[in-house]
Image (cartoon, rainbow, N blue to C red; front, side):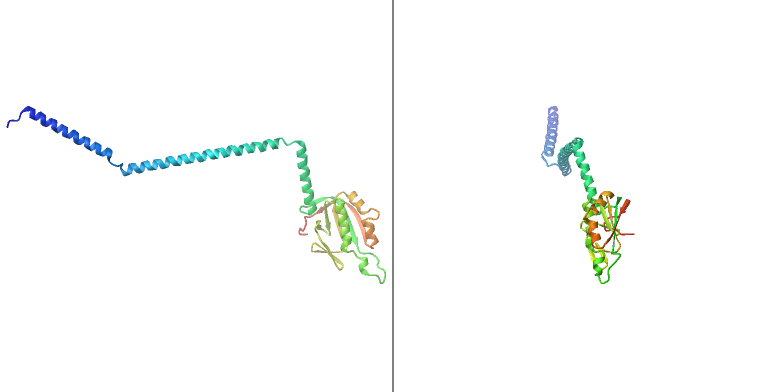
Length: 238
């Protein structure tokens, strides 16, 4: 059979058509097939990172709001402090002075200043047959002096160098006394820091402490001092 030109053209058209159909099928198959594992994992990571970014942004906004709130509170406090009037400053200063005075009274700090010393000694003379206990210094004699000094405004008081407070205990044991567990013997030197004239006047009032001690046959000597230093309560003595 003789091959004609139109047969060649027809064969070429059929070949091209087959090629196009095959190519179209390949493209359609690629589009309809599942995503490759690598690409799918990459998208998952991107979604995860995107969610983390969103969470971080939310947290940052919350922290910024808290910071603005705290800054506003600080500004309010600074404004209140700046507006403190003179009366409040005076009250604050008085409070600090009261605290310092109380610290001195309870013996927490060393105290120095003018004051007074009171020496108490046993009687110089004891009649024959008399009871010796009636002529020596007892704890209640010392307690009278200490109490009067505190009432008169003494900032600090010590007995034979031992600093005492309002809660200290004084115990008599024969010829000696114990001050908060520390043993002292006569003569007993009671030291008080404060206005020397005022403290002396409180002790020497008619019928007062000095009169009562002398009436109990106790020798009393009072001396004003320009400077006295007392260690803190229960501190070790040198």
